[in-house]
Amino acid sequence: MRQQSKEYIAILFVVSVMALNYPFLDLFDTTWLPFGIPLLYFYIYLFWFVIIVLLIVIVEHSEIHEPERPTPPSAKPPPTAAVDPSNAGGVDSENRPRC
Image (tube, rainbow, N blue to C red; front, top):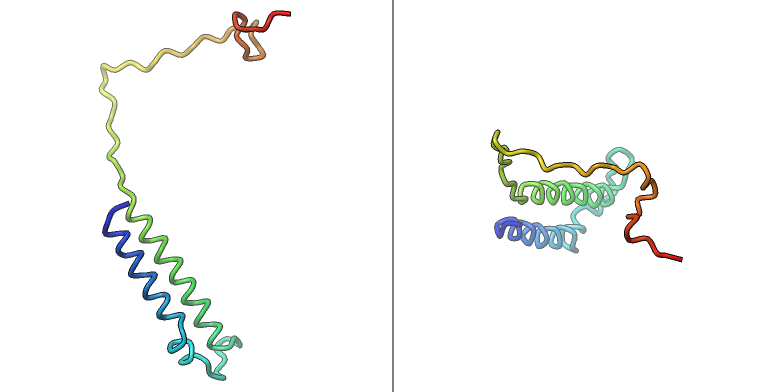
């Protein structure tokens, strides 16, 4: 994660703590009911949703993506191991415990 993203997350935390603390919560403690929901609950859940979305955006943009390197045409794929039909259980016959 990049340093700038860590700073954004710290800023988002501080803003969130301030926005979900007494002075701001008191502003929304009214009897008005948008969509039939008390305004205080609407504010808390809407702000909570916005915090989560912003965190997702910050974390997605903070990942450092390395460009894919195409394999050169001269490189051969690694050989695959041949499957022994007598070894159906997946246990190596040379390393089986002897009774």
